[in-house]
Image 1 (cartoon, helix red, strand yellow):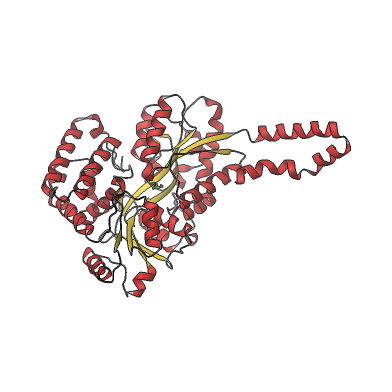
Image 2 (cartoon, rainbow, N blue to C red):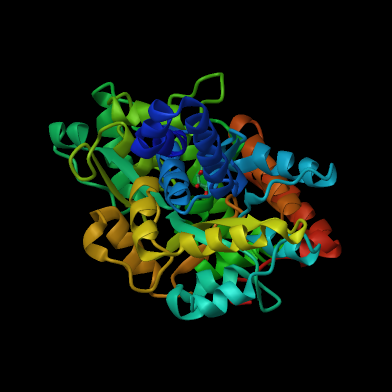
Length: 448
Ligand code: GAL
């Protein structure tokens, strides 16, 4: 690990100290102890970072961050809580804060940022924003996301696109297929693949993974405005709408093209199925790209990526952000230094290339991006008319509403006896209830 290496280098390579020991062993040892103390105090700054990135691609992205920190003499103390989409990590974070044992930095995304800021738990870093000209540098919707009541409370890392369809290039060229633009084309391809004995779509039954698929299906069957009616404003009528029933029907149709295992599989296992040719396509956020690259597959060679059918004009997104927990002020300077580091152009380029996401900056170097990222950035940078905040990845609404909706989508998918009408009634009732509670009123609009 780079950090450890950095700490050892001065002692092993310091010719002066070694020479001193040889000349006058006792004084030399003292010099050495002094050097160690000086070095330890130079490296004394350390931040514990709570996050949920455990896959190979994600760990590579973590290494980019921790190595960069080490260059600034800040040690990254790893607070990994492995959990796809951060469900477990958010629970651990909450309980640590309640126990008075908060980490200095935590991955906290979307709507949660302003909720936590309202509770006074996050460090306000306005001087960083002013000195670093964040408002000018960041894409407008990202800049709006990292603020709460006019204060900077989070540092952005990258933007993921969740309406992404990945396909195995070898299989597609063997069967002379091209990436589908419509659901009709998708079905033609899927049928052809099935006849050839190939699983068309890699999919896990884990609730958040299923709901990530449903998120994008709903967008494909409606529009950004309708999606927000349902998932941001939770208008009960939206859940009874025909566009919603069409989306549920589509989800059930797609089930035919999956081979589901009794156990819930991680998204990494599904990505491996795609990589090894055990499935031809996968619909998921583009963190899968980071994973496929980490497995040695080159974008546009080993796999291709395109928008999920009928969502090509939209960017269903989530932004990864780190917050600095407000503790005593002793680490403020280090936390602020870390925040500023995160939006440097070089770090943004390196980190996002590995993570599969795109830069949060207005003027990134597009030549450093692969075709998937370039397409994603070009679309996202067009602004709020094409940006759709992902429900599952915390961009649209609070945790309670999100989890309640995901549970119903999961129930519908798993139980073939559950009718579309009944699911709509259940979701409509949840929306009615939530709109009467505080949770329901906290919905975030990206234009807030
Ligand atoms: C998302 C997060 C990504 C990735 C993914 C899988 O919510 O934004 O960075 O980690 O979960 O765990």
